[in-house]
Length: 387
Image 1: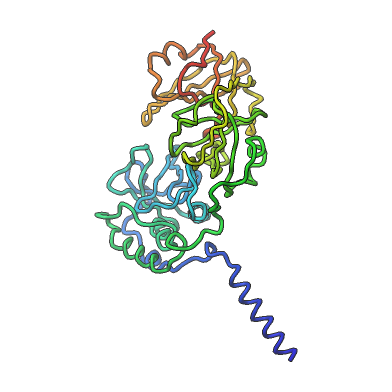
Image 2: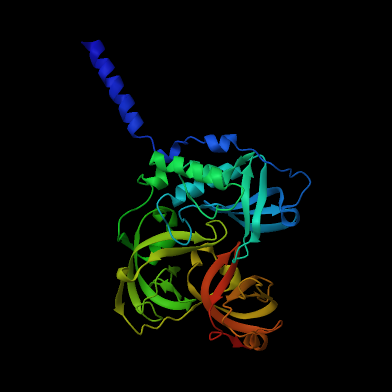
């Protein structure tokens, strides 16, 4: 009797162990990726000039985007043939898992090779490529791992194999094709917290739906910076415009997700997932005064706040050839740098008159960070005072 009872317990433990295995930890069948081989040589070639070449990973972005380098040049690459669920400007089921899978493969790869398609770049200035790691086509592997559907493969050299791999992945009913993502919060509203609580404890809210109350201090490209009574703030990336989201309005927004742009290590936190139905207007006409801050005193915890810097000198003016946005580099009297990221909607003549090299200014904006550099986000020059 004791032997039978022991066997029953052992079987139950095995069953329970099997039930607790996360589906995203299981790699699926990759017969198509296993069989595919490179039909080109890359040794001694440069991807940017030869359309194929070995590169080095600089950083991961999401499931189908990463930054690489060759020589001294760094560039963002959008993977061809796939479209993984979003994990940056919004959070979709399986987006974080796809991103983690891609980053794991690239980070641990011995060799990464990029192969260009018909077009070298997209409309955002990103390069387009088939991404090979250690002789395996990652784009195709993501299809077979059920982290993505195929996209834009018609007419390419890999059309048939991608479609065959996609059909096989659909049949598995796994991940993107039918499973619930255990790490995705499917709730509609989220836990009500303050901006201050979010900013000071961000790791606690990654992957959780959030409800935030605050006052719109500033808008950049129709997307607001929201601050609370403590002075903490955060950028809200709008998917849908709403008349309720205007400077001076105190609002509550539910169903938000915390993300980082371009990444958590070098970028800024932002809240995404705003829909009109989730915005509640509390009051209007509230005045928000920017907090004066010295450049060397800026810390990560200040990101998203509406701040003002004084007596900084313009040292460089740069205009993006892709977006037309301006990046103005400024220094304080001790040589500490801060950038101004200004919308392309501002006329060049205003930039020339107000922000020419050598100009000393006071200005305010929403504090962000890009590639480790702190900057003020500005949609106009209304806050600029030239000394």
